Structure formats: C-alpha cells, structure tokens
Amino acid sequence: MFEKLAIKSTKPAAVGSRWQQIRLGAHNVLPACLAVIPLGLALGVLLVRTGLPWWSAPLLAGLVFAGSLEFLLIGLLAVAAPLSHIALTTMVVNFRHVFYAISFPLHRVRGKGAKAYSMFALTDEAYALTVEAERENYSSARILSIQSLFHASWTISVLAGALLTGLIPESIKGLDFAVTALFTVLAIEAYKAYRSLPLSLLALISAVVASWIAPQSMMVVAMVMFLIGLSVAYLLRRGTKDPEGSHAR
Amino acid sequence: MPDNLYLFSAIALSAALTFALRALPFTFINKLRSNNFINYLAGRMPLGIMVVLLASTIPAGIMDLAVAWPVAAALATTVGLHLFKSNAVLSVLGGTAVYVAILSWPL
Image 1 (cartoon, rainbow over the protein chains, first blue to last red):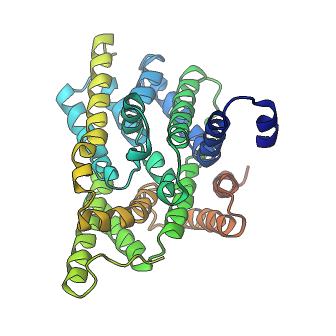
Image 2 (image 1 turned 90 degrees about the vertical axis):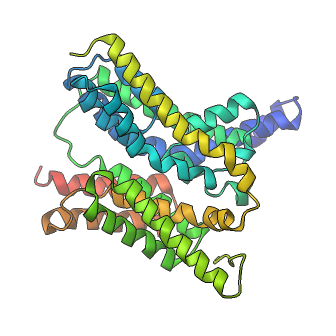
C-alpha cells in the first residue's frame, strides 16, 4: 500500500510520509475505536430512553468527550439538575485529567489550533495510546490521527445509539466488557514500556483501597494515592544515592 | 423534560470545565520540564494510571464468586491473547466474546 502510494505520488516525500503517519495513527487507535462502540451505543440508547432529545447525544459525546462523565450527566440533565451540580460532578469525575499533562507529548503537536484540539481531546484513551510517543518518535499527524479518529468513533457510536434506540437489542449482556479488555491491553502495553512490578502493585493497592473508602470517586482518589506513593518513593530514593531515578527497563 | 436552553448551557458548562482540566496544566508544565521530580513522575505515571483505569471498569460486586469468575475468565483470555498474539483488536474482541458468551449462557 505504501509502495503503491510512493510510486503514484509525484509530491514531495513529506506528503507521502504524512499520510503514512495518519495510517500509523489509525492502526494504533483501531482497538480503542472498536472497544467503545458498544459503550457509545449504550450511552445513546440510555440518553433517549431517559427522555432527552436525540440531538443532545452528539453534542454531549462530541463536546464533553469524556465517557464516564457522560453517563452521569444523562441522569443529571434529565432531572434538570442545577448547573452548580453539573459543574461539581464534572470537576470531581474529570479531575484526573490534570495529571495527564505530565506525560502527554503535546510538544510534538504542531500548530496552535492543533495543540488546542489535542488538549481538548486528551481522553484516557488518547493518553494511553501516546505512551510510546517519545520512544517511537510519533509525529504531530500521527497523534492528531489517533485523537480525531477516536473522537469520531465515539461521537458516531453515541449518535447511532440515540437514532437506532428501538433497533438495538437489550438481550446482549456483557458487551461493556470491551472497555475493561481495552484497558487491560493498554495496561500491558504501559507495562512493556516501563517494566515495574512494585509500581503496578502500588497502583493496584491504591485502586482497591480507593474503591473501598470512596466508591463514588474511586478514580481520582486512587490516582492521588498512587501519586503520594510515588512521591514517597522519590524522596526515599533521593535520600539514598541516585537522584535522577534509574529507569527500570 | 428539560428545555433546550438548559441542555445547551449544561453541556457547554461541562465541556468548558473538562477542557480547562485538560488544558490548564500545560500552561505551567513546560516550566517544570527540567524538574527532576516531574521527570520522575512522567515516566512512571502511565503504568499506574492504566492500572487504576482498568480497576475502575471492573464490575461492582466482584467479591461475589458469581460475578468474579466470568470476569476472571474474560481477563485471562484478553491477557493470554495479548501476550501470545500481540494484536490489540484480537485481544479486545476475544475477551469480550468470552464474557458475552458466559453471561448469555444458556442462550
């Protein structure tokens, strides 16, 4: 496919390589795009069955673009909850995103508008799928391809769910496991990039304790606990001899 | 049934706050790039965050054996497929298929 393009194209190499970068991004994001289809359909169906107009489905999915929050918002929108309640829920559920700037390769994205879009579309999946960006030298086009294709897949799935509410069978149970399977794969990939059993255990223990003491806001509590643990590990390490922190590879 | 103005305002508010949470940290992160502690976190956070996100999608009531064993079987399928085939689409579809099959049995 690439060879065919290269033969046909009389344009400079940069054009061909840009298309190639977009394709590489598409290859990276395909599992995530597929995994969220059942979830998106379910969100669209739920939205219409809750009594909200169908056109609010693509608005919610395309503009808020944060899956777990959108499920909570449907319930709040349906009862016309006060805007202060909407704001508080958004802050609590999405607070974890403030941590993503630390590792997300925004400096690789070229152009002001592209950077703004990249920050807007910095979902859990986009964060996970760019873990290798530094080592594998992802281009701006590849990162934007990952983010925009995921955005399109999510928005279209939610819209399809809202429009086809009557056609989607309720009997298929367990399709939502696709998201668990997706994060399993992403966790394995993150482990391949940074092989550390103690780190995985620290995160697992944080998650278990958080779901026990704060089941309603488990994600953010777990991430804060994990960060506190990391900070302690950093201070202990600095106290010994290796201030840079040797990378376990 | 909420009116349209309310729906627009609520969605716009939630979208704006989500954007702010995602974008604002970038305004000062560049100044911290040379900071040892930030670099220490940057390399180690993705793994931890993925483990937390994975844990957050595990169904409620996992301590109940009837809930736990289909999850365990589907997770084992996903991990096994991924370690042996390294094909993310196959791992996601395979694990999900096992989970759906167990939950809808007997058909």
